[in-house]
Image (tube, rainbow, N blue to C red; front, side):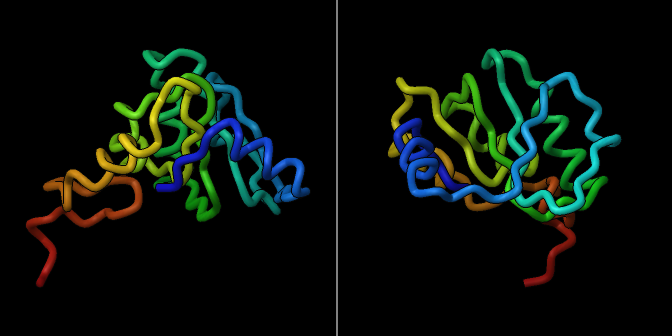
Length: 129
């Protein structure tokens, strides 16, 4: 998972990097979205305790088969990163007071999970080797 800061986003905007982006409100039904030509979807966490974007990311990956970038924006804390990754997020823009180094350390803490998730469907016990 790629971790970004507000400065990274600003630098990217200034450099002119602008893929086909779809910003989705956290109360939108992602089953009805037209994903044709979309390279990145931005899902918003208006408050860290509002987890609707987790469900949206999972739906986009598992049920809609979206293979592009799913970016978490808004009130994103390092505490949420492992679950975000398991739900299908590929990038997260951290809140200004969050340390990306701590986030990377948390993401590397677990080397695997017993259950499958949005991107790795097979449960650990069913994997060979």
